Every structure is written in C-alpha cells, then in structure tokens.
Image 1 (cartoon, helix red, strand yellow):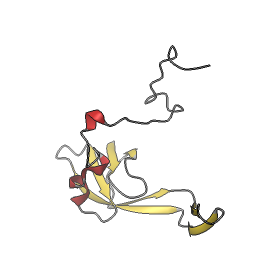
Image 2 (cartoon, one colour; image 1 turned 90 degrees about the horizontal axis):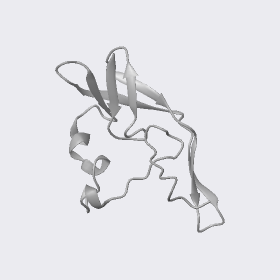
Image 3 (tube, rainbow, N blue to C red; image 1 turned 60 degrees about the vertical axis):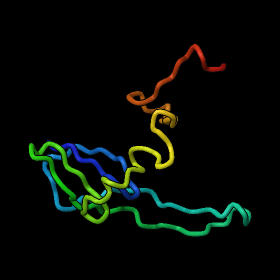
Image 4 (cartoon, helix red, strand yellow; image 1 turned 135 degrees about the horizontal axis):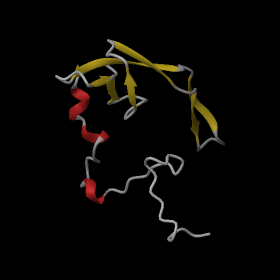
Length: 114
C-alpha cells in the first residue's frame, strides 16, 4: 500500500491509500458554482468538471509515500502556502478543522456555550 498526498489543486491536502503508484489519478469533486455577492447572488461561473486529474510528482525511496500535483512536477512542494501562511509564523496561525471529523476535531466541551 502507498500513502498518496495531493499537494495542490482542488484536492490540495487530500490523502489516499492506494495499492500502488499510478502515473495519473483522477479524483471526483462536486459541481462548483461561484456566486457574485454584489449582484443579488447571481452565478458568476460554474465549474461542471466533476473530476480533477493529478500526475505523479515523485515517490519516496522506500515507495511508501507518493506525491501528486496538477502538473506532475515537484514545484508545489516549494510553494509553502499548503504548509504555512506566507505572511505569518505557523505558531500564530489558528487551524480550523471540521467538528464532524473525530480524528482531527478538538473540542473542549467545558468551554463551549450551550
């Protein structure tokens, strides 16, 4: 099994476990509608492409980790916006995660308001 990470694009940060590495992976996505808030919520654009393709950028020497990018190059690894904000120290940046993800959510039930 290979741990695969998508570094950029619509699925940036997605983690998949695949039986092997592949030159290209295609991931599903919902139809995306961009709304213009200045014009009564009129649609400004619709992305009807329900899948996005990612190309293999590189594989670890032990072949247990593979990284995928939109163009198949490793330049996304140097664009650190997926790791830290460009203008702040990561220790100062709050992280927001979905409360519906029990593996990532951190909820202090004593501090929440009823």
